[in-house]
Amino acid sequence: MASGGDELVKYITEKVVVYIEDPRAIHARRAATKQPWSQKWFGMLPLGWSIWRSKWDHDKKE
Image (cartoon, rainbow, N blue to C red; front, side, top):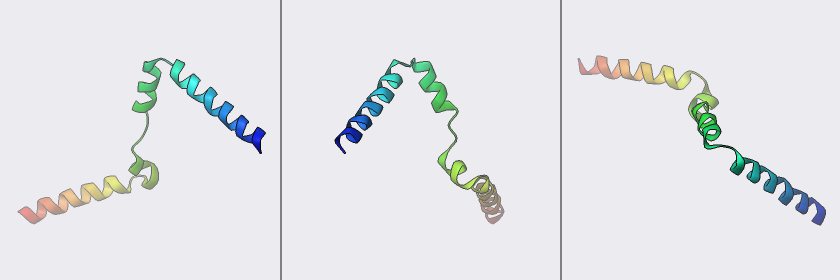
């Protein structure tokens, strides 16, 4: 079990070092291409609900 823990620490350390050594532009690009969590989990439903709700609220005000 101890060797497994050592391997885990080594793996995490390697990932952190690679992340730190990457330029900031790559981090920004990665963050920019990330889709919102609501779209990732529910697809187009949140957009449809928001359009439907805005139309419903607009009709209610008239």
